[in-house]
Amino acid sequence: MANWPIDLRGARVLLSNDDGFGAPGLETLRSVIETLCDDVWVVAPETEQSGAGHSLTIGRPLRIRERGPKAYSIDGTPTDCMLLSINRILSDHKPDLVLSGVNRGTNLGEDVTYSGTIAAAFEATILGVPAIAFSQDLGEGDVEDWRVARANLAGLTERLIATGWPANTLINVNFPAGDGAAPVEVRATSQGREKVGDEIAQAFDPRGRAYYWIGKKHVGEDAASDSDVAAIADGAISVTPIDLDFTDRATLGDLTRALA
Image (cartoon, rainbow, N blue to C red; front, top):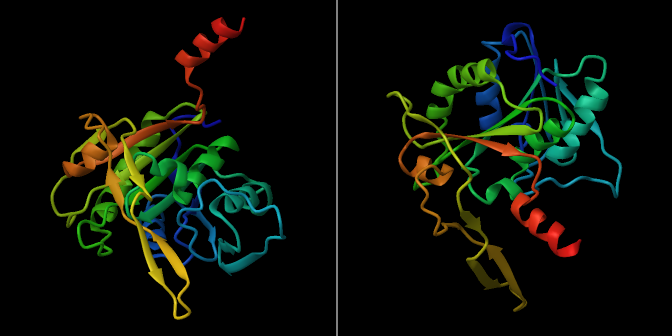
């Protein structure tokens, strides 16, 4: 459990992601956080794990590869990275804070269940380490542009850890597309509705066998003005607290009475 506020300069901060060890979003995060903290570690998947969700590798052994000072890659999922980094690599001095990202593309709405970026923060939270997941909207052309994230990461991280959050909660941050030149509004948001996978593209290989690609996201009918989806659509930074407890309390009460 964190002792708020965290002193970033003296803290041990662990970085991870789901886009893989060499991803530019992770390099963006590292370059910014190293200006705030003297003890920054990186443990990230060896290859891209986008869409891996909170999956865990249990059917084969995992390997840790040292990639430089305080930097490792693991041939597994973001969840594997958290387990091995916190319980093995950094077991003598566990991190004070985990930062995951910066993801290539947003993690809004239902993405929280698919995203490996959020899964790393989720697993860190389960292990008792406060965590923030960061994602960058790429805009209409899906062109990698990290300027908004780079311009806002340091200040927003400092503001969040100065405030703190409960032990069973992680923070999901999404940066809007833009050039990072002008100040950007920051909104505390709820989880909206945005779903991937309803568009399925079919094609055929040279032998005539069908194969399929899962298509683009679409925004759901939830147009709540306080949602993460609405914030990004308005060009604002979305900051959403995500609780580890998925229990529907109202339905739990109904079931308790019905099954008594």
